[in-house]
Image (cartoon, rainbow, N blue to C red; front, side, top):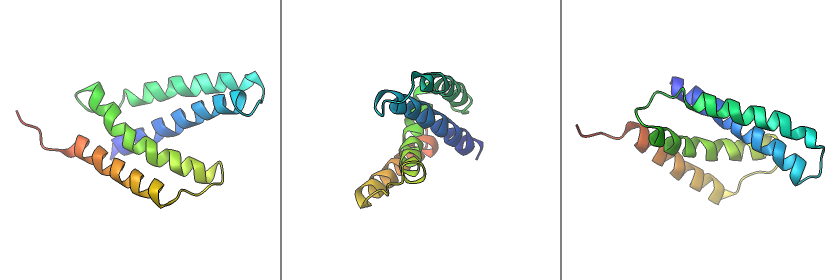
Amino acid sequence: MKFFFLYFLAAVSEIAGCFAYWVWLRLGKSAAWALPGAILLVFFALVLTRVDVDWAGRAYAAYGGVYIVASLLWMVVVEGSWPDRWDVLGAGACLAGAGLILYGPRGG
C-alpha cells in the first residue's frame, strides 16, 4: 500500500510541476511559475525513486497507469472539466496494466 501513496504523491508533484510550466508558457502568466514547477518536478523524481521495485523501468511503467488516472482527476479538480467515457475506459485499462506490471507472476 505504501507504493500507492508514493505513486499518488509522485503524480501530484509531476502534474503540478508540469502545470506550472503550462500556466507560464501556454497561459502567458509570469515566468515566476517556472521555479515552483522545477522544484515540484525534482520532488517528483525523488519520490518515484522510493517505490520498492527491483527495476526502475518497472516502477516507471506501473506509474504510468497511476499518472493517467491522476491527470484525469487533476482535470476535474483543478481545471473543472469532466472526463468522457473514453477517458474513463482508457484510464481503467491503464490501471489494469499497471496492476499486471506490479503483481504479475515472475519466473525465477
